[in-house]
Amino acid sequence: MPTHALIQSTELPMAIPTKDVKASEGSVVRPGFVLTRSPSGIFVPGDNVGQAKKNQLFAKVAGFVSYKATNDGQVEVSVGGSAPTSKPKAAAKPAEKSSEKPKAASKKKEAYTTDAPAPAGLLSSAPDKADDLKLVSGIGPVFEKTLNSNGIYLYSQLAAFTDRDVEWLAAQIGSFPDRIARDEWVDQAKDLAEGKPSRLKG
Image 1 (cartoon, helix red, strand yellow):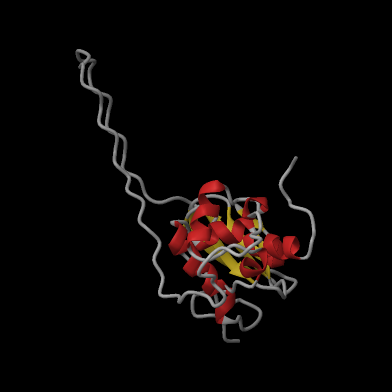
Image 2 (cartoon, rainbow, N blue to C red):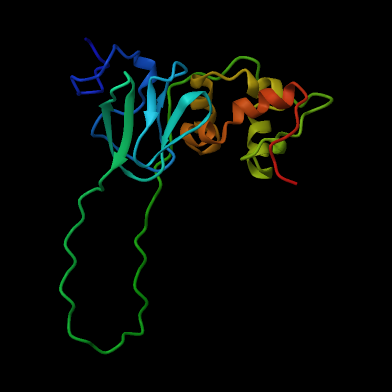
């Protein structure tokens, strides 16, 4: 049967919609990366893979993605192995201690970019009664200020976000979409908009 183009295995039990697979087989992912989204539950977590709400599977560790058909007609998603590393050099003879401190390797995090358009419903100014977005677990004072500066003041606005809206938001706040999905900002905002209590402890 046909399968998603990103999955190379010929043993998969059924055709898989394009929107459900977020990482191709053999690709390298970082911890927290959302691998699949499938409300139907066709995907199940394998090694080093966790499961969030709505059957979203995410990587627990950095490694390579693999897909494997199970006997009960599902697809097991695993992350394993590691990127090749260079062999450690043989220990040199002890030398006199240098007063200079070793320079730390500068790791510049690449900013997330997207072509997703700004969502509808952004406000040009604060409403008379803005919601406390810090009640969403994962949003602190800095993120709340950035959300406000981008026209987001209400739970109902965040609750209406689509996956593309989340991509746009991630680019605005200097984060990544999988971070927002993993912390379930949209689902939390829906609960708060309906008057349910915050998931924050205490």
